[in-house]
Amino acid sequence: MFSFAILRNNKLGMALPRGTFAFIRRTTMGSQQFIGEDHIVHTPKDEDLRIKVGELLTSSPRRKQTDYKVFPRSGV
Image (cartoon, rainbow, N blue to C red; front, side, top):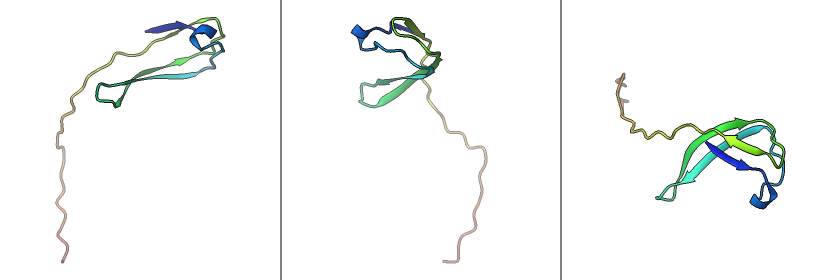
């Protein structure tokens, strides 16, 4: 969970409208990695904002063939 105050001294001295916060971090390789997102309600300035982000999961996708088709060769 991320929590911060919407104050001028942290460059957020304005109300935040209802919407979606997305968190992205830069990896050691320089690419961007999506961490998570949360929907917030309208938050007035000088209020605390708490954003709940899901846990970061590391996955290793594996390929699994579930079907195949044989296409006829063209007459070339």
